[in-house]
Image (cartoon, rainbow, N blue to C red; front, side, top):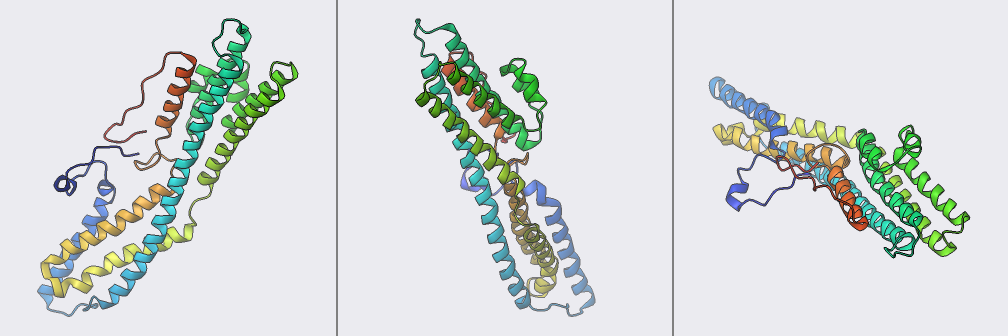
Length: 311
């Protein structure tokens, strides 16, 4: 995700780093070059251009604007829903860990050592879950992060699973059930902690739903083709009226349409690695820091943005 201080209004006009411009600049320059060729050819030959009036292009521009607005809203809704899901993840991890520490180890000397170890194990598994979910959604390997917080033989069971976050939740459920059978958790505390496991399962399922259900491909193709068609025809419709100002206006329109198209592509997949996608690694690190603090253990440093991009 792009994170940077807001520039002044004047500087905002010339900011390049952290914007969509570098990714659409070749297409914009292509439209500007085409516009120069159209103007030069019309001035040299004196022939009337096939589209002498911008009126027909106005109808196409209206249709394109409607499609752009729809797809941009749909993509942003997916991005914002994904952010809310990961906000819920942080809430549930913190609540689960605080309840586990309170019920099994609240720091009192008379509590058995095994209770403290159990609470620590549950909290460490929550940290591993955050890292495993981020890697699961991005297609990365979080074996190193999981191995730091999950001991053997549980580690082998988790790392060999095709869905590591789900495997960690199975370990949660199994351990809580064992604590209840052994009489170390009463029904009400067990029910409360078990609900937290179900809440984490809901976060996992919602994240997988967002990742595996993109905006219908037809919308993407239709918008992409219409945007290119409009920008390619635009110089022919305004060259006679604007002359050598045509490349400037055509480039501005192309930057707007191509930029919104590319931005919608990035927002459509909020769990990817594009600059505007969610900072899953930073969010997982935040959860790790919070839960280690609850245990009174050393915490890592928060992830910092590189070139204004937070991973």
